[in-house]
Image 1 (tube, rainbow over the protein chains, first blue to last red):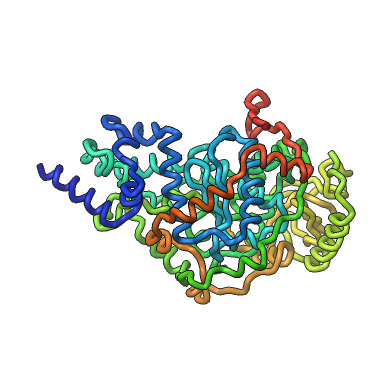
Image 2: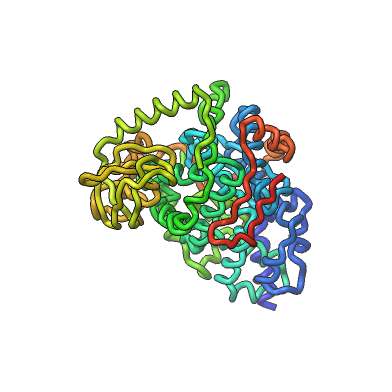
Length: 324
Length: 181
């Protein structure tokens, strides 16, 4: 009986604190149906169907755009969608409803949400020199989606808090939200470097398959290494994710036996953001990224977070170019 | 495996950029991370200009694409940038911040921002995301920008891009799955 009450309490917390629970209700998505009743935690997560993946991804992407809107440049957005779709067409999931966008924030990052949503920040877009670099960045994100890395994150978070999950076996909605909620700790601690390295290696090949210079992504990693951890727009990423130098090293390992066979590909001029799109929105908040990055790390205590919100946070589901 | 012919404008632009980078990157210290063959030109099929062993040091004098031209002692040649790390000897390869200034000069201007100054840097972080609400209007706009496979292929064709079948790294040929449209 006590257990049951705790479950109900936890569910209320989830809904009060927002996240996917709230937005899912608004969208008439029944989380209990997303994860059919009667399966254990890992099976439930790994059994996510493509329609379920699309629904979750759309929720996440929609909240992301609520935080950082599209750059107001239709021609640019269409261009990025064509580049991205061409790259995605070279993958094993060419027919997902792929959506690509540049979002209006000065942070340097790119994100992938389940089901085919890829968002590149304006801060990152503006440091790109050519279309091959854009293709490399998009290809890395496409790889995350193709490999369903977000599902892996959810599986791992479920495993981390297995004890709590077992107590809630009879309520898949709570289970789901708890699993996703624990993604914050994973995001902060960086459990899954292998997913980033895999996305890097796949991204190089996907860009090459699309006819681009395969090394666009490598160029971007060098740019990030050059900026260093003390660059404000990168502070959080450097705190929580593999250093670009490590990623270059890993890429070197897998590329070396194959590099001579890779086609040179094309670099192509990149379309610049229209001047009429203005600069980053003045209405945007001015967060202290570095400090918050440190805070999110220090809060990474698996199994000891009953007071923390359990709602779905896009930051926990979005898999960044330098995040998971 | 030659680079496809670039149009004159691109060639000219590339030459200007190349010259600029080469000039700006003079005498940047570099450490070789892996035993490497140096090429006379930034192409895998170019002649061998020399060899550098892991740990060798030199100066990065130019960059082109993924290639960096390194001068070490009497040897000068090109190698892939992922096989070098920029910065003084002992800077290490696993720190994103190491050698930053040297790389910055090769790969672009470095922002002079210290940790304290990051407070107030405008950007998107986890707090923003937690407070964000699903934006249906923006999502509809996003849907409107979507490209079909056909539209994407058409732009690729105009750009001179052709799909190529390439295995993922570490895969055998039989595992190739370049699903070209």
